[in-house]
Length: 458
Image (cartoon, rainbow, N blue to C red):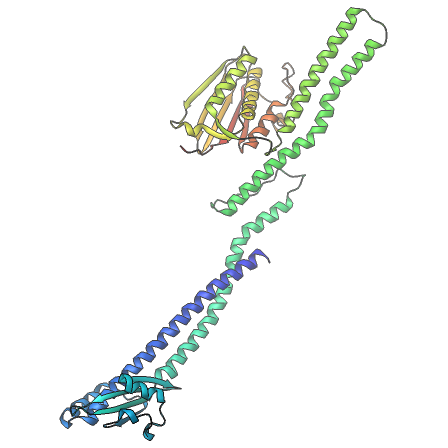
């Protein structure tokens, strides 16, 4: 069954169930009140009738006047008075044959009783006169309210239920469409996303609800898929391109050396050339494999609490050992007082690798000028900014900076394999973060790392 139909059936059942219960309660309450009220009216008339018929004429005139002034006649009102009755023979009395025997027995036992048959209501009571004689008073009448007003109320309720049913159906259909619409939009958009356009993302609604979380979760999944797909897609082409050059050099050097007998010095020179190319091959292979291993394999990576200020200090120490002429300037002026705000949920080794690659690149291309590293917490994110004043990146080449093994046209005088930035972006994406790069040619590059806080509690 479709989700929209399920929503319609659930809402329809809930609304109709409540409407039926509410209507039934009203009908039952009014009916019970009408029964009780009518029996009370019969009781008043029975007592008034008894006083008029059985007591002194002086008092009777007053009672009769009150009855005429304040008690309106009831439909088919009838009364029966049996004077000085014998309680033991009431049920057998032929004058009472048309009444229910249990009704008569209840009058004798309790002194009062009532019952209804069809539209006629009966009330009976024992009335004692001043001379200590027992008299049986039975009053009957038709309840106009029950026969007419209750019937009108019943018809009104049924009509209201029919109208309510139609309104509820329309409301549930409109409501279900409103709920399903964002999900339908997500379905339509996801159907357009394939391997050729994994860069597309879903629009995240502004309202903070389940649909927003669904869109964000799906976009995160697309980020992981895009990175994994790009890594796998580029792995073979990059491997064949980057590994072919040192392999060709090794094979060519060996063929030339073995083509004839040479002097020992020439063999040493040849072996040194082969060793140099083999070392390049090893570094490229390790870099390529490391890039492939950061393709969002969440099961392989172990995450824990990582404090970013300590990580920056460790990166500084590592970089200074590798680039001895690099000048790193740390800016911790925007650190919060609460150290928990500096913690992220991540893999410390991978984050260290990503940040150190970015800092090493800044040192490499800054030509000995200072490299600034700033750390801040803002709007629920931990921000790391690495800024240099180096050679920068040409504007028309910025779109290729995340391609593995791509190197800008102005980096020919600097060693490198073009693997650091793609590797760093993959690692930042694994941690649900974002990597931003801004660069101006011959003025420097600014790299901004944004990571979500771990939201740890004391």
